[in-house]
Image (cartoon, rainbow, N blue to C red; front, top):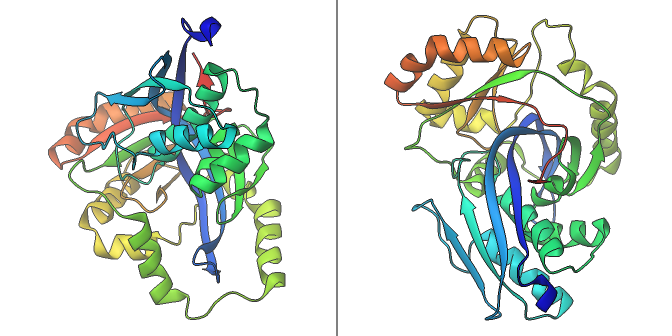
Length: 311
């Protein structure tokens, strides 16, 4: 432990967007069977980890709207790791928050995965990928994706991952009203009430949907700079109930050179894709004041080939 006392770890913890989100149906375990394509973007939080000698997990942040107690996924991840390994190591953790909260960008899930990766390094635990995946899956459905990140197919409740051998070089503009957040659990509940009137039992149907996404999913996103297609089933619920989402999608649809537009996850963040980062930057510059006047924060992002990284 003495050798670790001076060690300090810095990690980039990126957001994600959904390039496909299909709700196949409701499972008997209470979760939903999903078929998704998730992609990391370079809108990111930053975490700093260092040893403390008190055997405590101490979390601080520059974000005043975030709980820093045991209900925070960062603290949950650290405590799960300590329980798994049966150790009483402590850590001081500082979170610099850039990803908006409750935005459909999975900032909390990214932070949880970053904590597992960061403390595995800080405490020199030498846990393998399989163990980190297993721990991540007990914390939340989106969290395993971030262990490797990049672009992946995500099945099951999100924990069945298949790496895609593809590098998409689109630029993206993101819009979110800072006064609006959406509950993921409530959104899935509303979707389920409207569209899932019975539990899933047809395994063949599930496998066919998965195969279809494997075979054709990337084709929808590789159209030689023609108009692309993105499916998000949860948008059917949120867009009808949330004026912020409805207006954001309309504004993005009117942008010059926009290839496609969609809501990410359960919202309310919406995004538009452009052929490259420079085109996206030009569109944001031209429309930034308009977005702000209509109440939106806006970002321009590119896609990442990897997820969480040491810096």
